[in-house]
Structures are given as C-alpha cells and as structure tokens.
Length: 182
Image (tube, rainbow, N blue to C red; front, side, top):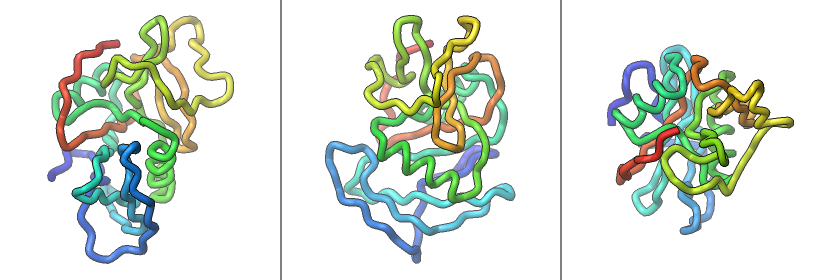
C-alpha cells in the first residue's frame, strides 16, 4: 500500500521486531500489535504497527500538511476512509504511545466534532463511548470550538474548525460509506 505524499504509514509488514503480544479480543477493533520497528520517514522517526490477517483494525496515518478540519475530513474521505476515531481506551493509548515513542510532538485533527447537541465521531451517527478530554475540555470557547484535536500527550482539545493542523486519519479493510457531516 502506498502512502500519500507527506504521510507516514503505520500499517506495515516486518521481518524482525522486538515484540509485545496483546491477547486477541473480538470485542476490540485493535487486537494484534507488535512494537519495536523503527521507520524513518521525512526526517521523523515513528514506531510501526502490524496488523495480522485474522484481526480487524484501523490503519493510522499522519499527514504533515496543515489543513483545517473540513479540508482534512474531505481529503481523508476522498482518499482513504475518514479522520481517526477511537473505539476504546486501548486503541487510543496504543496509537498515542506509538506516536510519542517515535518522537512525534505535534497536534493532529481527529474525527470528533460537536453537532450542537453532543460530540460525535465523523464516521458514525453514534455518540462517543470513550473520551480522553484534557482538563476543562471541551470548553467551546466563545461558542466557536466544534472540532477536536489530539495532542501528543494523548489528551483531546476542542478548537475552531478553521484552524490549520496536521491530520491523523484511519483506513479500514472494508471502507464503509460515510454520511455524517459536521
């Protein structure tokens, strides 16, 4: 699989790695992780994910090109699936640990938005079941913050959707139809 320009691929094949095995749990979408492979991409080092054929998981990518939330979502939907979503704490924590282990220290848009009634993932009409907001977030400062980003520390912040940030997006084996708009 090819990465788009300025993207880092986390879903990879490896030959030799130092591994930490996670037990398979059919209730989780992120079930088989190996740690230890170091990739160098565009002068940034990241640790890679491996997905085995019997597991269903997301593939995560970073685009180091600043986009506002809507541009980021449009790009992700056109080329892949959608902005990154997290179904549970384990999935979220593994992504954050992989980013920080590789030296990533930025902020990235994720697929979380406020539809004026509640915060929702952009690839689903369901309400969130897992959150990791920073203290005093979401704040909706001046009633203008309706999109969320992930800081490298793992916490989420709401912000104005028009602000430019890097993008964290995901793809799945079977790309679902996406209809929800913020």
